[in-house]
Length: 526
Ligand code: ADP
Image (cartoon, rainbow, N blue to C red; front, side):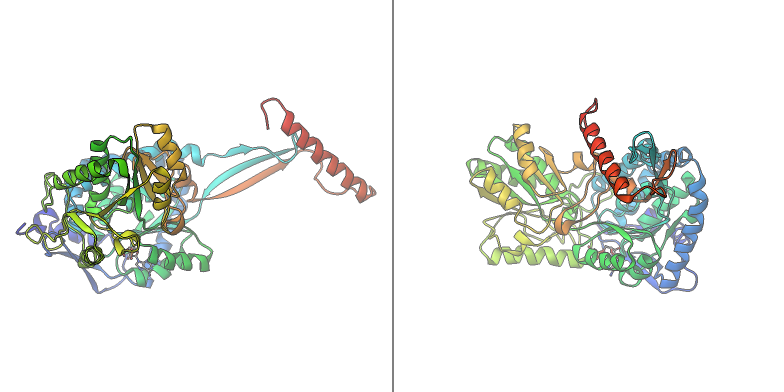
């Protein structure tokens, strides 16, 4: 590509309007944004300061108080309008996402559709999760207990560059529905995507002050942000996750963190080889492998290893690397020089240690300065960098194993545990294998999309892959404080003057024993 034509994709007047949506209270230095496809300048946003973050939190908190008073149905209706606005602005949004990330258009569309699915899901189901719940009281007929879910106040979101649209907005929508204000800190590389999406929230009827955006350096903004908020949602690297979790721990602020992965795919001997190869190629090379749930390791039953490897190489070679704003390329650019360097270092280390590059293993400067071919490695030693560390690029290793037991053991030989897949003709058996893999989610006979689109089911990581979940009930309850109100009928449960305590003690114990017996034997079970 000669030029991204930034002026056409994101005209100066639009950039100016979006910049003005950032919360900054004075003249600020600038953060330059470039287009990975060509390295051209896209524009600049303010390098916000700690003071800006404090202002943003104050504004979000004030706006949140009024917002939380609105009926939840009204808030849900606005979420549906958000979905409509996203679909209406599809072309502009996809252009902006591609401009800043260099990803393929189909990958950008996945982001947009994910926002729509999440908006629709929480608009329909969120009010059930927020409704007051009658719980079983301590003493039957005497104590009633009700559980209420109140907004926490202000939710802070620190988001990465790899899925800048959906991670910022899909994680924000349940926070808004629950009645919170939010402060969003997009990644340095992708502020305009976040700002453009937030402008669509404004259009959909979200009160402007409710959603604050601060742009700039994570190292500067993280601490003041975590100090002032009531819940932190973070998606990014495990290293940075540890830093922000430490800040949250100091403040006793609850945090949900979705971090790195070294995700395995397990191919059993009865798998459909062509389907597995196609699905794993997509699951590994979507977003040029810069996806926290993409596969970087495949373990294949040795009985089908040769056929599978050949099929995977063919499926990989069919993927078109490209830099364009149409739907033609399958694989886009990497986002930045540091990503390219990691990919190159992992492949160089693999080569040095005797691994075979079955396909790929080359930069594609003819396509774009940061483009790299989808790469399949075999014979990769278990202690190679590409076998242990997250590459976060288009590099996939394939290893034969003696059977499902070894596959499970190899899959679990990592500190991460985000996502995995199992490929088999026998889905019940696949479920059995899936249950032994230590990961927050496992797809059977699919890469990641079916799981990612299951907004009713929680997703997140175990081990070094994170804490907490998005989606489903857990994805909104984390943005609430729970209050329990109990009501007592008759006199309070307190000692009565003149009655010996040992009698009261005996009566209390007898009461608990009867209650225990009754709860185990009552009709309908315990
Ligand atoms: P990557 O290494 O892939 O860029 P990071 O985890 O560093 O991923 O970045 C994810 C988000 O975390 C970005 O918005 C970034 O600005 C932010 N960030 C980076 N360092 C810190 C920090 N020390 N405190 C808070 N946020 C940070």
